[in-house]
Amino acid sequence: MPSPAPNCSPCAPPPRRRPERRSADPHAPRFDFTISARDGKARTGEIAMRRGAIRTPAFMPVGTAATVKAMKPADVRSSGADIILGNTYHLMLRPTAERVARLGGLHTFMGWDRPILTDSGGYQVMSLSDLTKRDENGVTFKSHLDGTRHMLSPERSIEIQRLLGSDIVMAFDELVPTTSTREVQAAAMARSMRWAKRSRDAFDGGGDHAANAAIFGIQQGALDERLRAESAGELTAIGFDGYAVGGLAVGEGQEAMFGCLDFAPGQLPEDKPRYLMGVGKPTDIVGAVERGIDMFDCVLPTRSGRTGQAFTRAGPINIRNAKFGEDRGPLDPACACPVCATWERAYLHHLVRSGEMLGAMLMTEHNLYFYQALMADLRSAIADGTLSLFANRFRAEYRGEK
Image (cartoon, rainbow, N blue to C red; front, side):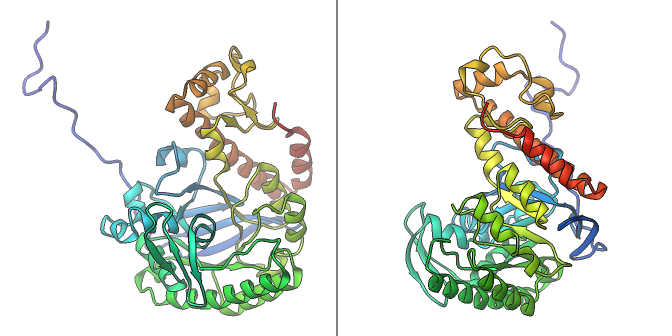
């Protein structure tokens, strides 16, 4: 047996090397949105920020707890993502925003050196928590983790997002179901606008963070065109870097959502990005882009990947189904992702049915590539003036579960 090389221990691990991180460009604009082409209501362009450019229309993978589940940051970037989303509610509870700040901020903490948008925490507070009090000041709630009591106000939400080092901060708002009475919807919208002003004021007082980050306001008003118009007018008067269409994708169905999107984006400033929160399925995204939306986020590609569902151009498939047990084809013959180039459906079927963690990782990676490829195709179609042709063909080919 050959002797080990001099000064080399055969059992010594290689030296640990952290991957190189791209620094924010101090000469890049804080936030600059340009529209390069239009096709009907749809737009394609770019958001320039200190940590990099965001091509629009853009899909943001969701990194709820400082991780895009089952994915390494470099692989998320390789899928085509320019920006990811982090969650204020979850990070404020664990590990806490203060700890993340002490450890260098969210980008350093999770190893993602490009833009991060953080939501305000309002949706999770109102959907996951045992609410004890909601008033003009904010929301007092019990943690879903351990029952401890916390207060989230516009000022506290902005403070948490500042501590995290978010690139795009979301204003704190109040969400009510679209099935609520108009009186309830109007009251929640009005309160959200008061909270938007407080969020803006708190953001502007954020010193260096405010000089390097952006803040988006959130339009509310359920499915009511007049309430949406009033909300848009108040947000515009306050002034934000971008505007979100909030309060949708909460069970109202695609037809009702599209009905709202037929008017809601057009009520917002033309020269600012428009972000549809929590959307969604591929056909939701295509229809929303046709109606003028520029940014999206959703847990669907990652959550579906962990449960064995893959998105393909012919529609979603459940890889758990027995018919895939000896299928030697790729997940999606039209996909160029590393998963489809390397592994067969039969192997993925085996991994998922066996509960192997690699199955969740590979299915998630494919789904993120699928979503980013869809966004790239939408950008190209808008630039070429062929969006309607592309969208109609996509809908014709994309069907139910196979």
